[in-house]
Each structure stands twice: as C-alpha cells, then as structure tokens.
Length: 174
Image (cartoon, rainbow, N blue to C red; front, side, top):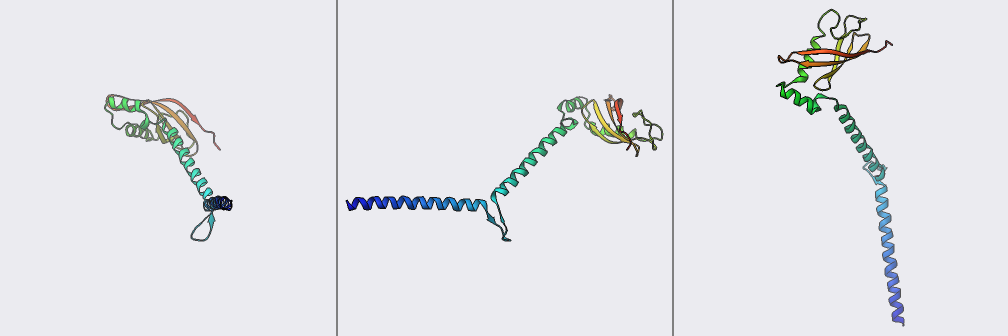
C-alpha cells in the first residue's frame, strides 16, 4: 500500500511540475512578446510594432489602389487606345498630341481652343492628360484665372493633330 501511495504522490508531483513549467513558459513567452528592450534601454511593445507594420501595409495597399484608380483614364494603360494607334503606325501619340497642344500656346492673339477672354495677356495650356485615343483634358490659365478644357482630337494620315473643343469651364476668381 505504501508503494501505491508513493506512485500516486510521484505522479501528482510530476504533473504539478509539468503544469508549473508550462505556466512559466507561457508567462515568459508573453512577456517577451509584450516587451522588447532595444539598445537604448527603451521598452517597446511587439504588439505596437505589429500594429505599426499593419498600418504601413494598409497605407501601401491604399496608395496602390489610388494609383490604379488614377491610371484608369490614362492612354498609357488603355489597351484599346494603344491598339488604335498601333494599327495606324503611330508610335508616340502622347508626345504628338502634347506637342500639338503646346504649339497652340504660341501667339499673341486669343487662344484658338479656349472661348473665354483672358484678364491677363493670353491663356496658356499648362497641364495635359490624354485620356484615350479620342479625348484629352487640359488645365489652362492666364496667370489670374484658371480653367479646364475637354478636347476631342483626331490624328490624320499625315500625323497632324486636329482638336475640337468639347467643353470648358472657368473657375471663379478669388
């Protein structure tokens, strides 16, 4: 009988030791996860680092989505527009259209594509975004007032660009 008591006590002692070491290892691993000490002796939380990484990854994902949204209306990403120009043997439509639009800025008279009258000298086209194989949007100003212009364009067989103003708007002065 004393032999059975010793076996039970031994089993109980062994299981208590196993339980104690298991609890100790769990506590130590939680402490290591929660606090890490860097070279300067400042403690920082592993959870905070993980959270910061998640925030950065979310920011990167958001920027990628925004970039893709911005590129949606862009000739460089428009396969139909690229194919349209490839079939006609036009290798650099962006440069061709941009150069033709900037050439309209030259002159002392009223701008040929903008129906509004400038308050200061002449309107000049500043920014150009080619949307696809037919449409381009521009920003223009005369230094005092600003506006936007939506143009339809066509490139003929001689690779000459023809513009047709579709819609324009002028922002109110401050």
